[in-house]
Length: 112
Image 1 (cartoon, rainbow, N blue to C red):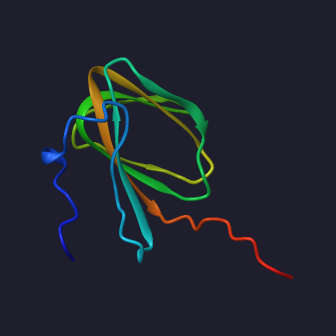
Image 2 (image 1 turned 90 degrees about the horizontal axis):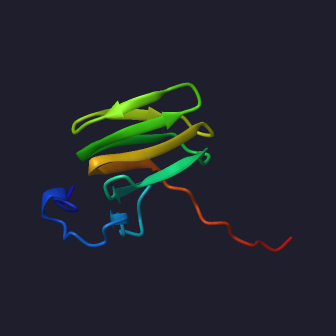
């Protein structure tokens, strides 16, 4: 398996959003490195139809679920089951986390 990237070597832009994603077309997994600047966040929402594993790469913040708020720091790994509430708040030094989940197939229109 080839090395896809080194998260320590990625450029500083974009400051918010997906800084890296798997682009290989023949895969069963998706993965993204998500960046949130200091104080920014992703509002709590119901996740998609796939379980998602997150790994905090750098920074700090808070994982907001339906039941609790969990502090996040580098090295933390969390499992977000499909269709559960999740949101993120970045701390004073921002937050970068890697997501890994089964690839969601795009919807295809099929003839009957």
